[in-house]
Image (cartoon, rainbow, N blue to C red; front, side, top):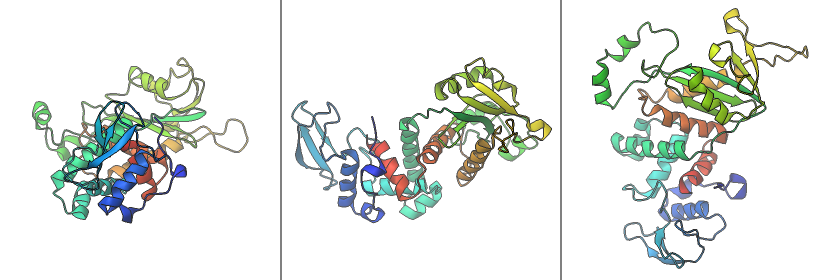
Length: 320
């Protein structure tokens, strides 16, 4: 289902979102941008208003004449049936877009940190699950990075491994990591001038990356990588493949003599710097939750918006 875009309607006003009545009005405009309320069960437009919610008086209720079913402004969305007010949820989402930590969001909203942690988990999961899947083509760069991620908040997994403290456990650790070694690899694919796709992996093997590459990058695309041998079969998989040899100190190469060094993975390397900066405020991310943080940041990066503009893209994702 297509989502309403910034170009199709007005930018959300943050000041309006702290007023519950205006907040629900904004949600209705996002969910039904053409002004026609449709039943979330059968998609019929034969809908009549049916009063308001007893607890939140600005939350409109409806009855569908076609089903017939009853629903309200938030039915079948991640925001339905929540204890906190809709204003709190929307502001929490806004602060997540600004990359505030759970502790900072809790301070801003005057909430318990554990409550905020549950809220941000549910919102990140919804964004990670419902974001559009990137489809890349043309010139694409592939690379991998390794992020330290244990089992914070999962005591059974910690006890099973019987490992030492985090600092001692990782002291002197070198080389390529694995999920089992609590240094999971992240595969990145980025189209030059376009979108990015990132995936946490169990390990870095050809059989692990092949399905992800084939599902994301259009056949026949020009793919640039470093000399790591997991990419050796890209030509066999239907791609044009060129490599840059980092081990020889080569980071970009001009093959056609036009003065432009087109063979490189510097775009992907630059993205890794952005990802590290994004993850830095969120200390101790577990490997169980890391894919949610990656999915959220992938959406943020591909949306190419910040602040109110990003909220304008996030809300339609959660309300459709």
